[in-house]
Length: 200
Image 1 (tube, rainbow, N blue to C red):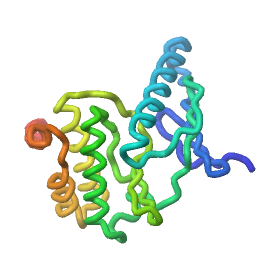
Image 2 (tube, rainbow, N blue to C red):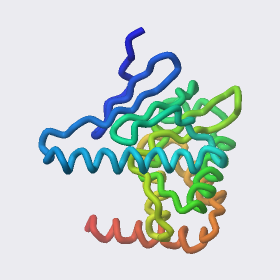
Image 3 (cartoon, rainbow, N blue to C red):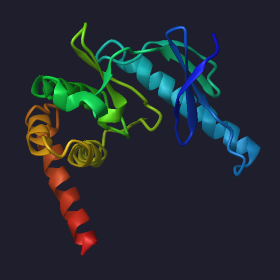
């Protein structure tokens, strides 16, 4: 069976074959070859390490193998992408689980970098929310970085799930229990003030 393209992002092509997802970081012709190879290698290794670190503490796809250059083979997560299905599910319980996952991830000093419901899959059989696509993830202990991660999710809920956004955001923030949650939640308010100030 030929691999089926299931996603094309800014830096990678995602294909599916035999219940296995392959993420291939494509060469960028506008970048110097040596720099391009170095960047793709760095990002591939970083993404692999982060998923490996999280695999026993929150639901993430299992890494099958990586060439540590530009390709990661991982488990395909069958389920409902929350960007398309959140409102039709028991979203209050699901959002609590999402908030718990983020708290655990942030306590490992891991920033997802693209926390949207497009990167979350609900597995009904297991009643678990899987986080996917750690292509922009990085390590950071900074309160600012953790606050920005949550702020991006707030923006995603506002734009994609506007009918339930107020309730959804409240659930996420009320259930966020990372070690420095008080300071992180305060920083979100400061980030939003900065955003409003820039908008004037």
